[in-house]
Image 1 (cartoon, rainbow, N blue to C red):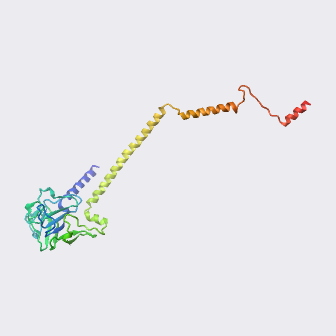
Image 2: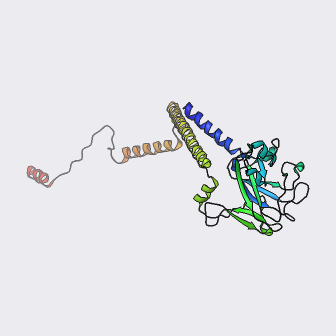
Image 3: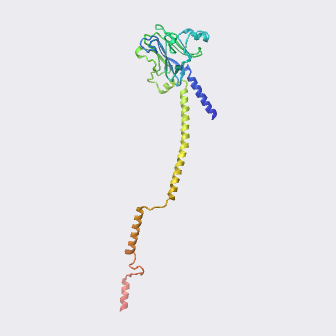
Length: 300
């Protein structure tokens, strides 16, 4: 039992640890030229990159790298590659993204404005290659090539009824910064859940929780139902004992019935069934025809 519990806790710890890394982050929407879309904390408008946490757990993006420089794909050491990218500060707790939520970085080339401002700018006339690297500066988590975009248009990821997402250019009036771009019309629930839980961690944890909750309910039910039945029987026994020990009391209704029965018995005794004398037996003989004829002959 201890081994099973230890394995379960180890599995949960690994799942949570995996969920808290930046490996579940994906580039979700990009705007390279912004004149009327969202503004930063200084009220300034600039291009931006939106990342989406695809996991059902927290994801921490701090320490990861963002870049639009293709030179990082060349054969070079990790320190050399890191110099060509923007590293997200490790000391900012705001980089912890809630499950299935979004985070936006402004590409204004002014990293001194805060954590969410990159040290590079996106081109508003040519295509932009954007990549998200893990904290080791070697592993690519996600990347996308954004085509040239008109002012205030964005390049966003949409989910249809297919397994793979579809990237589309979105006009200015339809841009959804910080909001999901998912289109699930015609998509079955199974396909949607499979897409949202690609590694199956959510369904595994849900199944384990269902089993644990069911066992807990059964345990509580059997334990307290048996106690309740025992308490009910004990209460019933106590009531029965008290009823036996209490003296018998006749009700007024019982007294009236007894008086009526006694009165009827006396009435029958004095008027209908018994003789008039109480100490003399009276026999009333009935004379038959043969008896009368015999008496006449004797008289003659």
